[in-house]
Image (tube, rainbow, N blue to C red):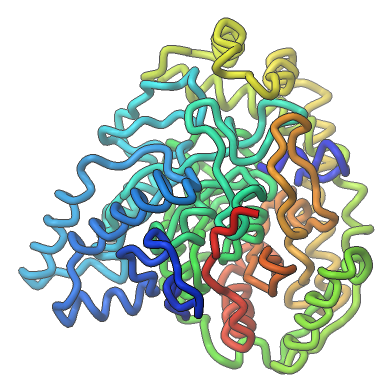
Length: 524
């Protein structure tokens, strides 16, 4: 969750990447090993017999060693799966025997370090207080990945506690994992809280990754790192086995270099889980294959609202947005100017109150059955205080303390705030119907600011994450262009269960514009 932007502004806030393609000589770590093709291309090569899952996993591991651990040291991977090569070998054996589970068979996937994996890796949300927490079983979405034939390559770093620890935290920093860098310009921030997932995908350390979002934590790092990110409808993906913030807003989601890869990953992740009641609502609402929506003419005849407030601001960002609107129109969409964010402002006041209550309740429930040395939020706070030099060298834990001071979910304050916040869904549905809109677009976020441990994170003038987050509605970001070497994303959001529609429109825009490009790992 991009909690910094909330506190400062009132808002919680198919291309193979040829890393050696520059006309100037590149250091070895720029081109070492990894073929950053999309999933479909990788599957084609494995089917043809000129690539194996073992080879692909080893190339990913080599690239992590060359780029994440050394070279530019983007520090996006917090832990590697010691069994990844063996898992890949077993999947290669299945392929040789004639069994291919689907498009993710043998594909390496990184998952955020707040998602349980029932293996030898830890699940810590980046917190030293949870170091040593080895889950007894997989999160439901990890079960889905393994069943689909994916190789869990490792865990990605994140903003500690999904950026819900302090009022002046720095995105991409955790006490266990340190600071993740933006692979485009290294001193710039990758945003959060799915910082490691965004940076790793952008840098070509893995084909795809899984992030989580409460408000902006998939969309913002995807925009800042120049990749595709999808926050699904709450309930399409299970949250069981994921360290929580909010039972009303949390969801996992795909992060990838192409919309098609996001659709493939979403198809594998979605499913009804008896341990997450919210997923019951998804029965009959999801799609058997989200790639079926990816047609060249998906924008033709669509009526799309574009946020008028994003037509003012940075003289570097606004032209990218204006060009995106023109590109959507050129692809056959009817574009309508709307003042959507003004309408949604009345719902924002209740969000932070809802999250503080739900965080305490959710974390206490998660820790009560976890294999961690702390068993409650109160114990986390005490641990952090006792180990302040390691855990809190830059910022404190006042958000954790605020949550601990709250009562239960039967509190009048919580219920009133929840009503204000979740009312966003009805407002959005009414607005879409009144304006006869299929979707609304806006600038996902501004270009990345500098990483600043002294002053904490700060906004960059644009944000579009809050309405869909509060409503629990789907939201897709796709690269829209660059401000110098810093990427900026274009957001598509719509009504609940409309992931297929949004992915189709985002794919048509992506194919018409092709703004994604490999990072240059610039030192300044």
